[in-house]
Length: 414
Image (cartoon, rainbow, N blue to C red; front, top):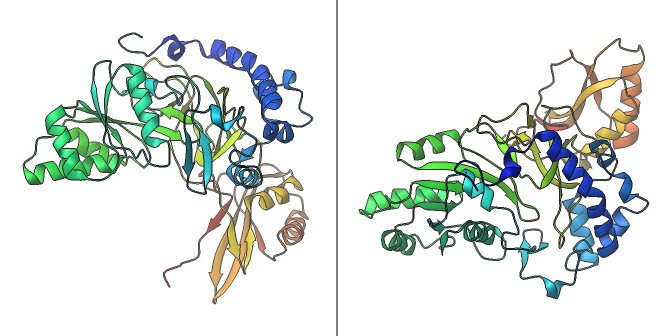
């Protein structure tokens, strides 16, 4: 631990980090298959020793939350994807769905300490943790990370604002952890009632969007607020640094951005679904689809950290849309495009015309357009979705780069 970085991993040469991660990956996959029957089934036929590069990893199937939830129903609580007996885990959590998650190994099982360090937290700080400790692991992710860093934690949890203000005045914490908006609730209530919350000077927030206007307001009040992107399954996936140049991927994870509804990585900079592989021994998630949209930021951060950066949360990848009473799924659109490799990009647009649902497949072609491509796409669209729809050739580069495969543009207010 230095004055600027949590450890040497943060400033490691990117090529060396990549080589190290993929040297470790085959053993992690083999361990998962040998110790978790869910992974043995999901990765049946996969030679673990051969998965030693991004290209090889990209050939593995993505595990998405609906599949995990279905497996957990059939084989509770973890669907066979945890490596070990449930009695061996320190805690078991239940997230909405429900989805069951085990607490991993070590003093900082969700790798939160480095995110706190990047946000300015240091050993000896008193931290007011206002994320919920009930059912889900959110409060514990921040709590254990702060304690692993050497901080003292007040487990405030969510709600009960008056009692939390009592704690702020008595304990004088320098740091806040919790959702972005609840910090404003505390500060506003303190100002309204004449309570003293001035000790708070830094915060690490998660579990919600930190809007630029809210960050600016905190800065005007003398509070430096950074955010961490975390999930209950994986822990902290990426975190901000003082440079404010995107979210830096946690150094012990492999992140990919794939086209929604597929297993295929997208070019750097294109928006897609964030897929993560971790090296947890108790919960070894391999190509786990978060369902969240993001994109890779090119280059390195000026803070000196060298790992891949993400633009942050950019929406949800699950774009299943009901049209004429039937669901259309991004996987179906991907299946249409797989039949026609000359299509560079496409988007299925769902609209309302004369009180009827209609859909239109807008598509781009990089080179010459085959004469019969439109008719062929129309046929494939009907065969795969079981619904008729128009097809429209648009200029290359005209479709928004926002990760959407299906865009529901119906007006639900009228």
